Figure (cartoon, rainbow, N blue to C red):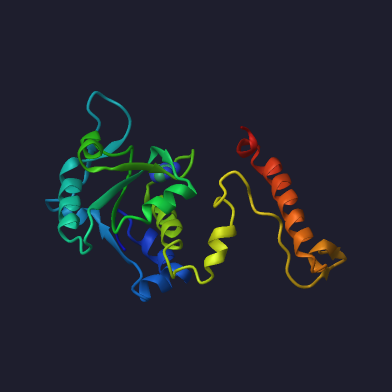
Amino acid sequence: MQIDIITLFPEMITTPLAQSMIGRAQEGGLVSINVHQLRDWAEGKWQVVDDTVYGGGQGMLLQCEPLFKAVADLKSKNETSSDSYVVLMTPQGQVFKQQQAVELGQHEHIIIICGHYEGVDYRVIEELVDLELSIGDYVLTNGAIAATVVVDAVVRLLPEVLGNEQSSVEESFSNPDLLEAPAYTKPAVFRGLEVPPILLSGDHAKISAWRKEQALKRTQKNRPDLTQD
Ligand code: ADE
């Protein structure tokens, strides 16, 4: 899989994605993640990429020219055999869910545009963007951290990236309506706090029933929105 990210802040992305599982996935050639500076496609001494909003309104928008050039350039360097899929990170997008991480993982080449300032010229969205994505109902200073979140969630699901395949099957949001049950590790008693005895019983049927019940309780407590029909 090839992922190209266009941003004004490459360092906000490269360092986090060089760590741990995603770093190893890159080293092992399972994914190629390339982070690009948008200004590299801007003209002039100051390599300006933004301007004010027509019709009035706050702030600055990313302009068409550098983004159109960047996307065309990166599409021409698509080394995979399938089409490029273009995602824009923006608080105006669909809210990112686990199912979307699964679906994005089906694309061989993804180009992610990180929004900045008040957003991007809408012609970019109409002409270039296949999917507008938000990571939640809050506004970040720019889309770089949001892109990092999306790439992490997508890449860890790729075959061979997650060491233990099982853990992606059992985790929360594989069943989008249920959180995971509480889990414990050694010691069995810590400062007088005991691990629920059923987990030490070796009775797998009982443990499984307990986990289901606890998962439901936790979901009702933390995410009641998931339990409403
Ligand atoms: N840029 C700013 N806020 C964002 C958000 N919540 N999701 C995606 N991109 C963003």
